[in-house]
Amino acid sequence: METQAPAVPILARHVFRAGIGEPERMYTLLPDRLVVESPAHPPMWYDLAELRRVQLKYDRGKARQYWFTIIDTDRGQLRIRHSHFAGLANVEDRRATYTPFVLQLLAQLERYPNVQMTSGSMFSFVGLLLLIPLIVIIGAFALSIGRTDAVIVTGVMMLVLLLNLGKYRPRTITAAAPPRGLLPL
Image (cartoon, rainbow, N blue to C red; front, side, top):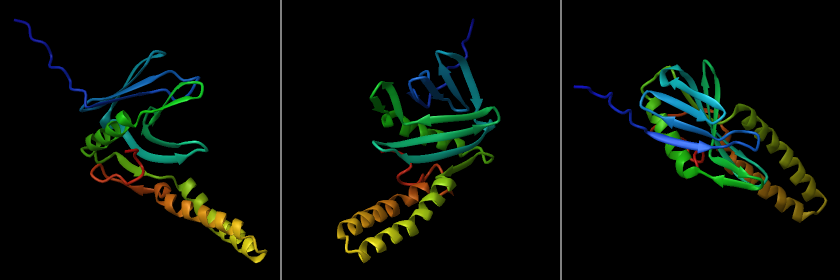
């Protein structure tokens, strides 16, 4: 009597293409490993125990918001985005699979104390902090020359900066409570 090995359950899956010159990649999360597949390369297997760091990041472009996860391993870095480049001027929002994938990944990694889970970006955070005095100076100058329209614009800029500052603040995170704003809902 032959017996088959039990099937390994798929916990989550996310597929996206980062840009026109990139192949589509499929990320499949299994209980003990992450599999990355693309038509251009053979599948890559990453044991969850070999992951070193998972970082959630947020970036605001000119036309849209971007959420992405950076995974550091001994064999390099993986960058998973919520958006999919479907073609010229055609970017699809794939948060329906991205957010559950990342939440499930974080939950699986709770078992591995060697994996560091972080969010934010020190570079972006410091850059935004340096903008605060510049915006204040511009606003004060605009006020001194009687340009109330420019004062309003700098006030709005300051409000937007302060509301988004928390998304860029570097910090340690947990799977149970990832910071608000770092995963598209």
